Image (cartoon, rainbow, N blue to C red; front, side):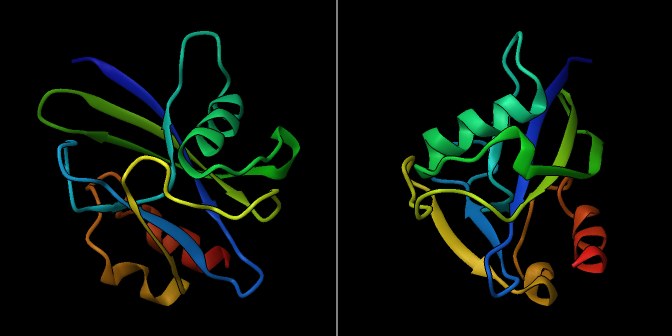
Length: 132
């Protein structure tokens, strides 16, 4: 089974809310909510992938030093295995805006379970909620 490496981040605003992105139509798992991030390219660290993905997907800048590792997901889907570190970030430049057709929503930690997520993301919710 192919292993896919993805890096994700819980962006936390000054009110303690977490940014979720809804996967757009036409993508696998369309309509589900997820933490921003994306595939780690060859030669990238997970942090470098997030810095790149956040700029491409949300138009914001952050730095490796602002990404704190929190936990990770390891989940087998039907045709691949996902390994995904989850970072927390409270400092970035710019205002997040949807650059790739996704819907964005700031969500309180206690409401995260109200948003349908990919199976790999679901176990991350209580860890993040307890940390916040």
